[in-house]
Every structure is written in structure tokens, then in C-alpha cells.
View 1 (spheres, rainbow, N blue to C red):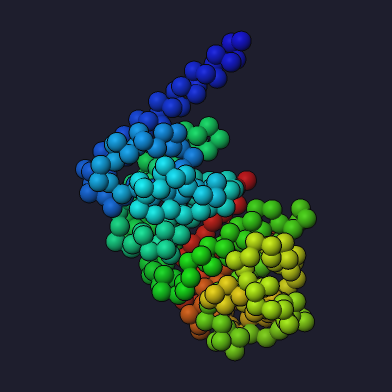
View 2 (cartoon, helix red, strand yellow):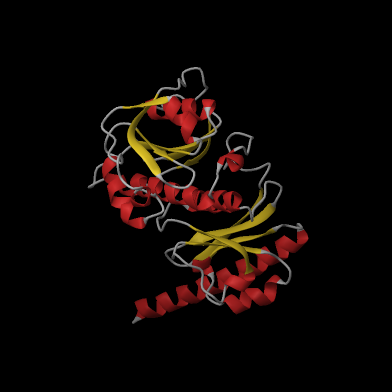
Length: 301
């Protein structure tokens, strides 16, 4: 009985804290003339309540539930879908900002109030003010050229989602490392060669598009073989098991990064492709553009 009462008290405290954090975020947004507030939908128990506080403030939503509720959609300037894994608070904010940038409703010059907290208890407990063009450790290089290189944001989102799933789950319980190279496919093919018989060769294009959820298990299976996936701007997988020939030895990368990272840096240095690397040893996911890694999402312990 005492335990149940304690849980009800804790839940009440959590709701009070979340409400206080939301009100504070709205006030901060007004005071700092922020472009908007970034928030995960899991923390919104009552959409009407935040709607009353927002006024003219823009709300940017992220969700791990697949879709944003109809009641929330009129309040949002835009929304992004994040894979339903726990990557840690900083990583979850990184993902939401990156996908918002790729879709165009977050801009490099924006200042955002980013709210985060415990997904387990659905309680907000931290606020971060982010100046997108200055602050982001999210962008460990100062350039935002990636935004020019993403042709279709939904394809980038799908590739990133699969990479994050591989990092989190591996394949049949074993860690997996791989590379996805997206865009500028003609030049990428010039700077690469097939290591094995292409498992996607001869298939109709509609049967090898990464936007097709039925293809996910096949991609995870082929991720266990050496080489990279080459993905066209529209999501069609051209090949797997591809060796990337562009040398990355002269590029400055942190010590300890392996051959996949060198290959990703090399291919993005000589093309306008974007490369997403899953590290077999650490489970980290790193995104490369123009020869540099500008974002890292570490696997939660």
C-alpha cells in the first residue's frame, strides 16, 4: 500500500515538474527571442495546455511513436520521427535537430529552446538553449554542407534509422559494422569496386528501395558482409559489398578510428555523397560529409 502511494506521489511530482519546465521554456523562448521550442511528444500529456502557453512561439516536435497525434499537429511548425531507442538525452536532441535541419523547418541561424528528460518516467528535467549555427557539438566541423548534399530528407532519415538499429541491435545478437553511402552515386561508383557478387543486382528498383520497410531485414543481413551499401538519392540501393577506393589517409581523423571511417572520409572528400558509418567495436554511428565527421551518436551502455 505504501509503495503504491509513493508511486502516486512521484507521478504527481513528475507532472508538476514537467508543467513547470514547459512554462519555463515558453518564458525563456520569449525572453531570448528564440525561433522555437523543441520537444518530444512523449512529454505532452495535455496538448491544449501547452497551446495556451505558446502564443506565437513555434513548437518543433520529435516523436518515437511513429506519428504525431492530430491534436498536436496544428501546434507544430514541423515534426520528425526518431527510432524508438534510448540513445541518451544529448543524442536524442542531436537527432531531432539534424532531421529538422534536413527537412528545412530548422535553419542554421535558429536559436532553439530544447527540452529533454526521462522517457521512462515521462518527466522533463532539463532545458538547453541551442544556437544552431554556433553551438552544436552536434556539428563537430563548422560547416553545414551536409544540408546541400541531402537530396530527399526522407531517404536520409530511413538510412540513418537503419544504421541506428544496427548499432543498437547488431545482427542476431552480434555487433555489426558497415557503411551507407548516400547520393552522388555516379561519382561514388567511379571511386569504388565490387568485392562480391552484388546481392541487389538484377532486382527491379521498386524491390530495392530503402524506403520499403520490408527490405530492412535483408539490409541487416547484408550488413554482415564486408563493403559499403551505395544508395541513390531516391532511396534505390544500387549495391552492397562495395569497396571504397578513395583514400582517406591524408585526412585528419581521431586516433582509434578504423578503416571504415577512413573509407567514409575518403569517399565524401571526393564526392558530394553523405556517408553513415556504424562502428562494429563501439556501436557508435558517425555521419560524414565533405571528408569530415560532423556528428557522432554513441551507443548507450
